[in-house]
Length: 79
Image (tube, rainbow, N blue to C red; front, side, top):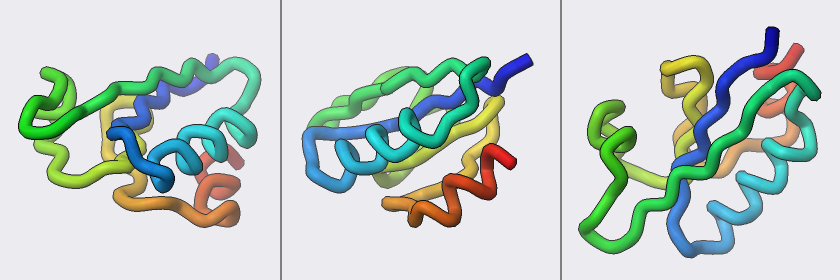
């Protein structure tokens, strides 16, 4: 069974690059959901995880990466 991946983003180049990288490297059984935060308003899941910065990658309910990951970091997540 695949992993549930949530990518918390805003309207910034680093967030877009992170989302693209995750989607490119993710396993075929995984589900990727983009959760957008803007300005002072953030989605309820971000509040539940106490996310303070974007991009943030959450896998199966646990924060995995904060900030733009490297290709190597992403590959390690899906090995």
